[in-house]
Amino acid sequence: MFRNIADQIQLLKDRGMLFRDETSAQHFLENISYYRLKGYWWDMQQDRITHTFTPNTYFESVVERYNFDRHLRLILFDAVERIEIALRTKMIYHLSISYGATWYLDSNLFVEQNKHVEHINHLQREFGYSQEIFIKDHKRKHPNTNAEAWKIMEIASMGTLSKFYKNLNHQLPEKSLIAKEMGLNLHSELSSWLEAIVYVRNIIAHHSRLWSRNMVKRPIDNINNPIGIWFDNNLLPVQRKKPFLIISSMIYMCNKVTPNHQIKEKILAIIDNNPEVPIYKLGFLNNWRSEPLWE
Picture (cartoon, rainbow, N blue to C red):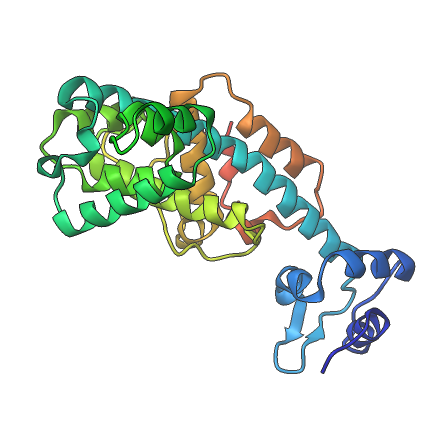
């Protein structure tokens, strides 16, 4: 049954939610939908059948969670950008030096041929849609000619880059070199991390919720001989399945590709500025702040 804003507030009150300022709550519900906010109050219910709330549950606490999550996603998008640009640069550079300007078309460099064809088709569609000046210039000067990797890969999405990397032949020394330059010793570890980061990137790009979400894609946490500061394999299962592990992997990788970044400091700042927000819902628990990666 459709409910107007006043009815939505009344329904929440009937279920036990408290309001410090109903006028402000009306404004929020006019601009942030009921079901978007629902993801932030879901665990505040004491009965998920009747949807009644635990005592002293305030609407303003839901808004605090929402805003915290929004600010966290903005910070993480900065991290994604740094990682994506570094990956793209290294793939273009190392593979072009070794295998030529159009290495991405060489099926001999890839493991699964059917996936390679699929990835090429997707990449060429991205190329066709692109309105970048250098792409339009290529189409004008070289019609019906395959673009060099440093052109076409520059407009590839991170998801496409991740798929191309994973499908590279495992014996290629460049595959291992790229992994090492991204901070990992094994290409399988980098593929795992990239898939997880792409997953988070898609959540962020669609303005979806990280808050209290179980991650479908999870990076390998027991990495081989870490190049940088990492965990000593003492993560709890909940830390592995919540955003904490992926966020930590992004910090680790940014430490390698963009030293002196401020990603970690920004995350710590929003945590310190929101002491009432239960960050354990994101997997930040078990003395996480004493870990060298987060100190």
